[in-house]
Image (cartoon, rainbow, N blue to C red):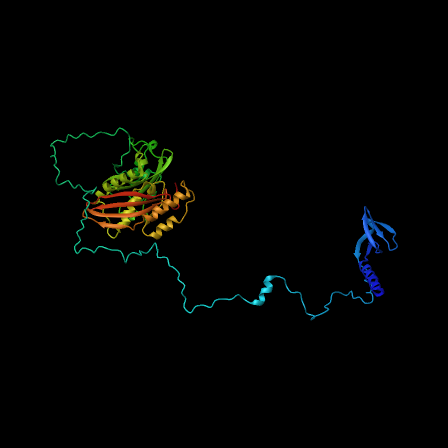
Length: 451
């Protein structure tokens, strides 16, 4: 019992020594004030000294407060305070992880089934292919007849040929012509007129030097005279009157590659009608000035839709070509190029002051290149434009030239920058030297265009 009491007293002394702390203040002048306890009260640090006295130090004199233990006293006899040690077992013993994941590593990877010698896995395949007719080999089909009995009717209607001419009853011509011809009292300009060649008018014009003698038609009026007549303020008054002339006028030969296939001399005149600049494309044939393109409706004073203006220009073109033997394709010129040049000439939005671009669509790649370019501004929404692009793509057809009994029929697609319109054109080259054109709108607002 006596030895047990001594051991308990030694343990108490050891714990007291280990719990004793030495707190210290480091003053600004370098002095170190040590005590058993340091606390702050207001603007002062209170240090409890070893004897139990409390000394106050102002905060301004304190540089640092240290709460550090003094050098630990030596262990009491029979005690070791150097740290934990291994009392039994190997020195390298470590605490094992209590994580189940680490504990299961000793079992290795999970058991796997061995692979079969023959792979019996069945993977179904999709028999549906939207591009392949999977029923082609199993579908019943009709055998082709040895003799083709299909009857294909032919179209007997030709807008350029009078098919009833030989069977129609006709009246004999009267000995005296009693036909009454009314006069025009509305004041519209004539599509063509005959005027005498006036060298003085050409010489006195301010831009007459730009046109050489070689460009003027030898059997008709001078191009400048025709242009002054087209842009006269009053068609009933002579153009020799200065007040009746356009405020500005320019005339030049039209020799662009898009019209060279027509094989006829063309002239382009630009003048003022009211407060707007207009363009007139004309030719000189049979001693007359013939308006065949440009802003023809504005020049003659009529408000015509584009299709009617094209028909008006085509009729004037046929009349002008009649003096040259008819509207026939020149030697060495492709019929498709001839038809495209005719459509470009008679379309007022292409040959007129709008100056829209007209492009032949002969391959699907050309159509895709047009639709791939988005417009800078368009009145239609993006969804409606995509619908128009799908319609245009589904309506593509390569240019075709069909030879008929009465002439050749040429069909082709064109794209115009005016409205982004894709149009199917049909041009008929009749054997009698007459040409006509018709167009059918396919889609609009595609590609880079102007509304």
